[in-house]
Each structure stands twice: as structure tokens, then as C-alpha cells.
Length: 270
Image 1 (cartoon, rainbow, N blue to C red):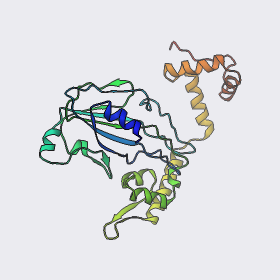
Image 2: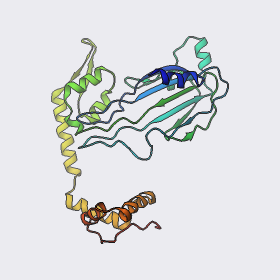
Image 3: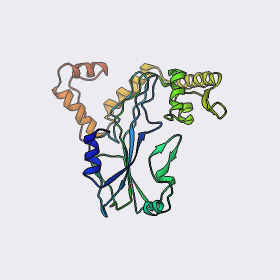
Image 4: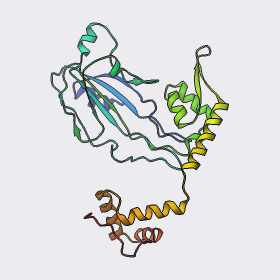
């Protein structure tokens, strides 16, 4: 964290830094994954009342802004949590563990080490529905990382093992997303990947995809009917119409691809 950010966060506001780390299982998955977002944890300090709102500078909870490419998965969105009426002061007096963040594999010390009323917010430009006080915990996971590139089940095994060793990847997500079977060896103190089981998992995933897939012409017909019926939110119709009514080349390409009338627009009154 740069000096300016330190000043803005800890000198301007009554917040004590409790932890800052990468959030496990939160990358944009792919053959080439994205980076991991940061989760920061703060304790209200020297203030009896603090109202917290989230500025609209992070990713949306309604739309994934950073989608993946060529089979990669989108990045996670931001979230923030506020624990009010907490027992943090009592835990400090007893010299017991406090809150520092979410760590590997699934240790969430905000839920395990302290008690209180937990408020969760997944949108920007929102006020928390509660007032924090001395010792309460404010935690924010900054989204905005990129989506993945390429099919996750094509990710090379050495890179997956490295993420496991760094504590960025849990074995559950390793199996469900990368289709890689891995276990921790207590004797050698390292993660071991079962290559035979991994090959089986990946082949099974390919067959599952083929079983669910449909020919392109059937997909096209279904989606074309969705467009004709206007099966989409009003805001999206308005956005499309803005381009259809004012564009030059794209409206022709869009209507041609979907075999629509030359004057087609969406009915925004439905």
C-alpha cells in the first residue's frame, strides 16, 4: 500500500489496519488465470460512531465487468462486511485471536474469532444499515481483477501446484474448476497432484460438456427468438436501441447476423 493510501485510510478515518492479504479462490479462472484481489480488514479506533458507505468505484454486483476469454471464467465481484456490536474489546483484554482476514484454506476469522451483528454489502454506492463503534470490524474485498484466459482444465499442473503451495487455491476449487486431484503430504510438507486421477477428471468434464452442448444452428435459432421476443431487461433493450438507432456499421451487422428486419428495434414498453 502506498503512502498516500495509508494517509487516506488511516489518518483521515478512525480505522486501525488489522490485515491485508490476497483473497484465496477469487481469481478469474482459466488456462492462464488472473491475479487475486486484496481483502483488507480494519478495526474502528477512537470513534464511538462511524457510518460506512461504499463508493461506486468497484465492480458491480449485477454485471461481471471483467469476463473471461476463450473459455476463461469471469473475475469475482467486490464485497464488503461490517461487524457491529462486536466483542472485539473483550477479546483484546483476554488476549485472544482477533480478525485479520480470510486465509487458506477456508479460515474466516471474522466468523470464527469474534461475535456481533454481521452486515454484508455487495454493491457500490450503498450505505451499511448500521452504525459502527469502537472495536467494530470493517472489511472490504476489492474486486476488479481480470477474467481468465483459456479453458481452466487446460491449466498446466506445475502452475496449479504453485498456487496450492502459496495458499491461493483450495483443493475443493482445484478439483471442481481445474479438474485436478491434489492432496497435502504431511511428511514432505508439500502438495502432491495425482496425475492419473486428474486425467480422469478432465476427460469426464469434457464428456459432460459434450452431453450438454447443442449444435450452433439450434443455439442461433433459440437466441434469435429471444431477441424477437425481447427476453431481456428493459435497461438492456434501451442500450441496444441506442446503438441500433445511432450506429452506422454495427446495426447492419447485428440485424444481418440475426436475420432481422432492416428497421428492427426492441420494444421498450413491454
